[in-house]
Length: 456
Image (cartoon, rainbow, N blue to C red; front, side, top):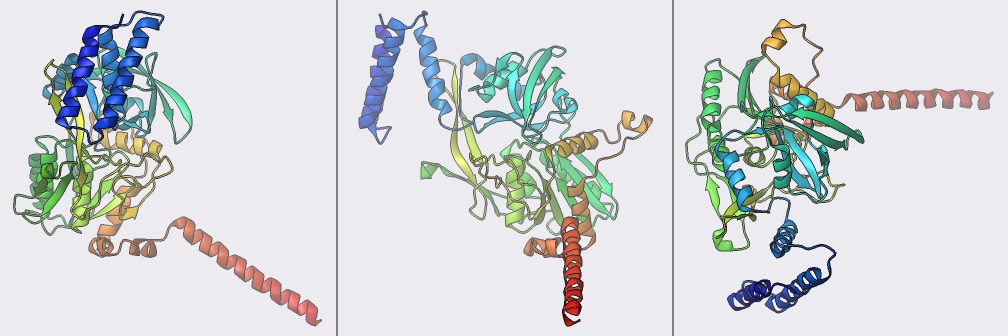
């Protein structure tokens, strides 16, 4: 017989909802809760196997939260403790950022110098199995839990790669994950280059110090590479915007159901680099905080954005601890850029306009991006120096940024992005124009010849 305690619990829950008027449609809420109680009672009486009521309730809670969005998540007490361990220390894993996209476990980006990165996992890969477990209906937290383990142990990832329509298997050995988040160098023509792979507590200081070092070398412009940057701390993103945008400028705001909870975040410092021309590089692996920085600099016309559309992770989550030690990670707001536009991801698979749209769009295949990622990470390593260098992959996005800077066109293209296509037409278009002209000439010759015949 159905546990009476569960009945009492569910009825008490309804009373709390009804009396507290939490839901606007409280009339229908009772009917839906009644239906859930009835189903649980049927399962208890008729299902072929014995099921614990607590497991049924847990499944109902997880199913309810799963209908919200890919980022909201119910965490058991153990899950919550594991999450706190992750944020407070290092762990053994494969080194990828994941999310649920269109109900599929999707790679946002592999992290630099990690097993997944060296194995060749790419942004937008769909993970369909972890070891022998299907990822259908899995949550991102459950997937992380399966992929994490002691350093030196193996995990098998089966992925589907949309760009090539291939199913691939990766045997990956876990290791302790440590990430170097920022690198700098001087490019030819006195162009400074900084690549930031994650926004953490040290990112602002690191970027600020590197900018000061590059400034001593009299750089004429900066390339700020945020490709494959999955985001991180909001404070870090705001502080980095403060390096380039004038004081007290709005960086981002949050839009909530409760208007009184909406927040506005402004730059707090006078910018040390207010005048330097900037080109920001993004791709499909750029998400969250990297989209805030890119979108803010784009809105204030402080940077020209080059690359492909970013990921589109524009929501705010908070962790709400519950009385039994479990917790609810809940999306409570959406990010809104200074211009009023949202950083959003579409569930429409045909919609490629996710996230931040670059001013200069350069299409790069996921395979090429993966090779460029590995190439960038292996620069200046002993392995790279001691052995004969392999043929390098052409970084068309970076080359485009350099070309624009050397042509002194950054400010012009910020104001009129379409002018880039006129100044630098694609080779395919040039070839097509030439072919069209040749065809027209051929037609002219043919017409004259036909005319001559008729005249004769």
